[in-house]
Length: 456
Image 1 (cartoon, rainbow, N blue to C red):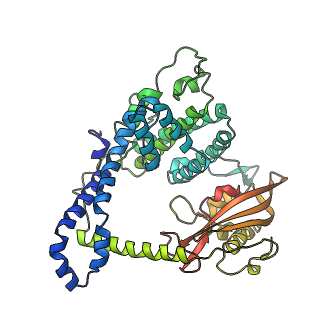
Image 2: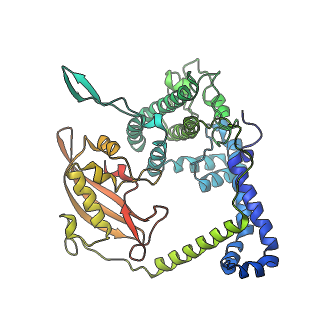
Image 3: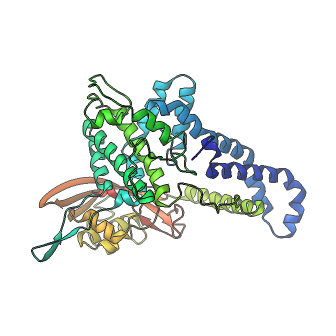
């Protein structure tokens, strides 16, 4: 389905074409500058935006080749590039590998898959329906409707992450492999009305406008990790051979590098599954050419962004940090009204109060998903129903211009047992339109909690 290189896929080709258009505009700008001034264009802002065009074009060209270079170096070692993979990490790893230091490169890749990264990417995967779906959590029993325990792939992934963080790779790896298998299978069924497991030779897991779904991506990786393992092996492996692990033939897979590669595979499958869910595995035939706004419009937008960036920098420079002692300057616990308006602690106390009241609708307004939107109340209720908040107490606040790290002691009842836990919570202030961070005290915005699973 896909051919050539990843650099050739439309989403990367458009980046290259846009950079080229801006570069051409830079060359003719001196000639049309007088006319632009006459029609009221902010030419100073345009000039500032154009100052970095050469650097931007160089970076875009380097970015365009990075996925191909990554896969060339690492697919045979069980890694794959995908859209949500960190560019800086990929670049460092590729440069090390191309210099002949593959061992150091793989250490960089393993280090990337720490808890916070995995948590963020799992939250992104919630956008893919089969990753979040559960059976109807209500069942009729003896004439009455009662709750039924159900679990989504996301829920199971959270448990696998706990094992990963604790170094229980023997438990984590098979679960993450099973999640990747199941996600691929269900998404294939949804798209094609027939089974298409990763291990199926007949199933094709390509997508025309996808990094992971390129023919040099998942399909090539499958040839590595789906290798038949027909004899028991007790020596350590560093490639997550699916059949050997899942069928008990590779017994010494219990290590961090295999676990990290398995997470990498899951997130790459997630990218392909998203394309399958949106019916974007193949071109529809109606795409036509690239639709760019005019170069002038792009530069005007760039000029506006530059202005806003400079304003934000100035606000950050002028921002004065607070020094707060919990229990002296603010109460450790109390009603939201006891805390100053627009403060991160008031937002957190309000959130915790709503959790305490089991008011999941109001609680969800403070919680943000991977798409930046407020979480659905029903989803939050489902996540928190077995975690009843009994009490809470702030212990420390460390403020920043657009974020605040707050330590809070929680008493949570889980399945009838009270457990006291200390949590580190980062409240983030976002602009009213939800598009960017907002410096506290100088911009309109609200405090939200993006990494809300840290509460559980």
